Image (tube, rainbow, N blue to C red; front, side, top):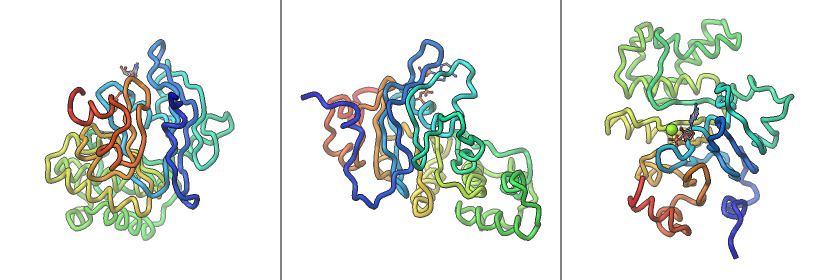
Amino acid sequence: MKKTTNELSHIEEPAQKQIVYQTKELNLWYGDTHALKDIHLDIYENEITAIIGPSGCGKSTFIKTLNRMVELVPIVKTSGEILYRGRNIFDKTYPVEELRTKVGMVFQKPNPFPKSIYDNIAYGPRIHGIKDRKILDEIVEKSLRNAAIWDEVKDRLKENAYGLSGGQQQRLCIARALAIEPDVILMDEPTSALDPISTLKVEELVQELKEKFSIIIVTHNMQQAARISDKTAFFLNGEVIEYDQTDKIFSTPKDKRTENYITGRFG
Ligand code: ADP
Ligand code: MG
């Protein structure tokens, strides 16, 4: 019997494992383009969930839907539900600003603000009303330490962030996301603009961060997904073709299309 999308997207897990995000019959259109089709995914706490698939299959759209950033595009329409910690973020009464303080985002190209290293990190906490210099100092240090870049920048906090290398800028952007003490971190191909050594540093960092946060990472680098993630969702043409433990996806995929993709036959 053909399995429904729902069955395919549900993974048996011990009951104590918490679900952070649950999408149900999630659909999204850009005008006439149906970019997400009936997405059912359970995303678990303190795990790294990788989203893989060929260019244009809806990976970025999916993660930008999780913090409702995608709605900044005026032609976007959505249907279905996204439960974040049990509450539907599409509800009219849902406080979107609060959601965005719980869900940090890191983009493909490092995008530091044209400000000092210190002010990049202090920016979010200041917006949230923290003015005490001592508290800000602590947040800046803690965030930079957690993003594994403190030792490289501690003597140049007043310098402009643009003076950092690309890899350092990306870890700075991760530190900036951490400074608001998020619950979830969304990452959209965070290493695709980085050299191999910086990529490795960011991968190590992401693995450390899952102790404290839940991480959803888009990558078109399958080795990266295999190396660092706990679960992997394979997207194709706006659909989730297969979602499972990462080792299963890469060793014994159930769907031929997943197998073709991970063995490099297309994409
Ligand atoms: P991926 O990140 O997997 O490469 P995207 O989520 O960026 O894919 O895109 C999915 C589909 O949605 C593509 O067909 C793309 O052309 C379309 N799309 C993405 N962003 C927009 C937009 N702002 N306006 C219209 N169509 C878009
Ligand atoms: Mg993308």
